[in-house]
Length: 104
Image (cartoon, rainbow, N blue to C red; front, side):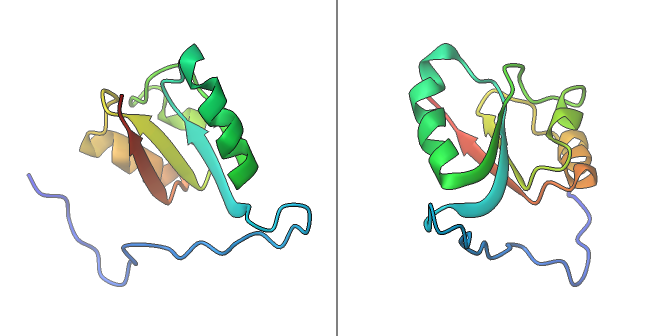
């Protein structure tokens, strides 16, 4: 069943760089990362240099765990996480504006 399309909703939001002088390339984006495993810590340290805030969530993204991302600009999900229509609706209700995917 296709998701309803609402009028006047932008498909993408332009992300402005942070004005923080200490890190001029840092994006004004907070990121909640699901399904984090120990081998990912080196990548997370890179993300922490690029985003204003990074929340590490070890549990996979699902309808039950989606509230953990409330208030974050974007979420990063693993390919095996649940991105059903219900989960995407929950993320939208959280105020999450973007979903980034990663795979092994």
